[in-house]
Length: 225
Image (cartoon, rainbow, N blue to C red; front, side, top):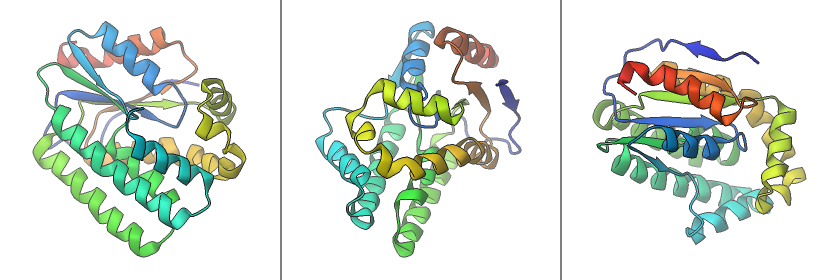
């Protein structure tokens, strides 16, 4: 798989002091974020999931169990977007570079798959667009969006290798969900980055973490890193 560099179609309205490591579930975003934190000094990582957030863990588990999609899918996605937005506002413009483990720009795709009520999704969509516009106009967009990409076999292997119980125990219930996400994930992120003028790069998740880091550092040279 080749590494692909794309040029955004629009110029950013405001640039914040952060980058994002994004991409499909289980492709190594957290590992890469930690590595970038080690090689970029000074920097800070804001992780996607926090083990001490009991409500988030509960909603995620219930969503994956698929016993009441209309309730738990909607609750999880709304809870997640509001928490992520607060984290972005607090950390987007720190003095040192912030590395986000995934971002709010990806949340729409999960919500589209998990919110089954059209009226509720319409509310979510308006909320998401409003937040993205506030980021674009007021807070600032990331300097670089790293999109990790890999084929389905790699995704499935990584998912079971990391052995997150809520995912492995409910894999068969969510297999079609995962397959559809994987099919559309990269292009969705490319389109979002083009829409909001975010500089981005697609990186092969099969490369070593060190190789990925070198590619990203090369992209960040324009910003003095």
